[in-house]
Image (cartoon, rainbow, N blue to C red; front, side, top):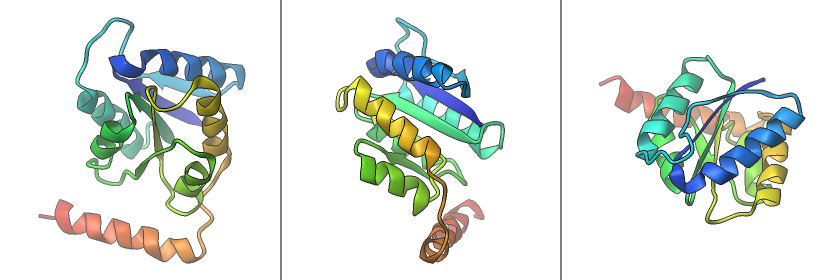
Length: 150
């Protein structure tokens, strides 16, 4: 699995810790920034990562900012992307199993490093379970197409 990663300056420290965690697991990733000391607009980083995932260059993405909220909002603007804020185990698992999210977002000001590592593991090990959720995810895609077809 190839993962795209990005952050703003508010979450640089958490991103670095998660990159070490992924390296330790032998998971391939690419860091789209920001770099230490860079002040960036998080929508620019979120768009870059989400676009790379939408194009199929990466299977999944992980985005970090102060709360995770702004990254999720921005990533969800990219057609074909489903992103969710993941701050607890159940929602993290369901973001994959029920909603087939390709991008998880987290906030360094909201959760600690050890919880973040645990959530990343849950998210990476979870797959879309289909079943009753398939029609719901398909409807999300249909609604999205109403706006992107214009």
